[in-house]
Length: 141
Image (cartoon, rainbow, N blue to C red; front, side):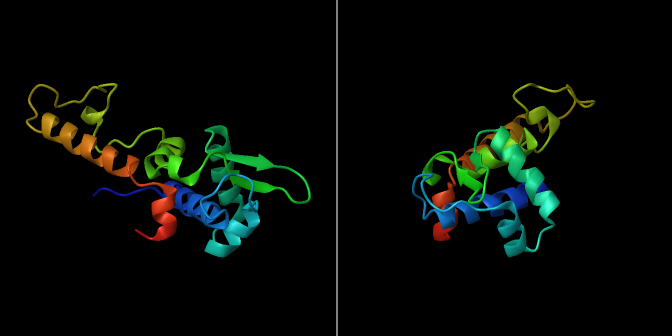
């Protein structure tokens, strides 16, 4: 069964939370601490901090140190997709190995009849996630 990892789920929740605090505007709004996000969702702060650090490294959010420090979006909410978040946290969104752009090898390669349908499904799934933005999540669409 297709399932998003907890890391992605928490990352999407955190990014939506940050976007909602900024009302979808530029990064000039209220910063969000890892602790406030973790507390809001009842997620262990250590896990949330690691997820946020990875999102910083991947360029989706920026961190500010100091008394009023925390996290902000690195760009406007309408420029960040759910696909961007998943790729930042998992490095891929592939449902099966043969659906990757890298063409990872498969034990059934050559005899399997589902490679092309899986590639079409993968493409549709990627497009779907890449077309849902943080603005959509904040609005609840």
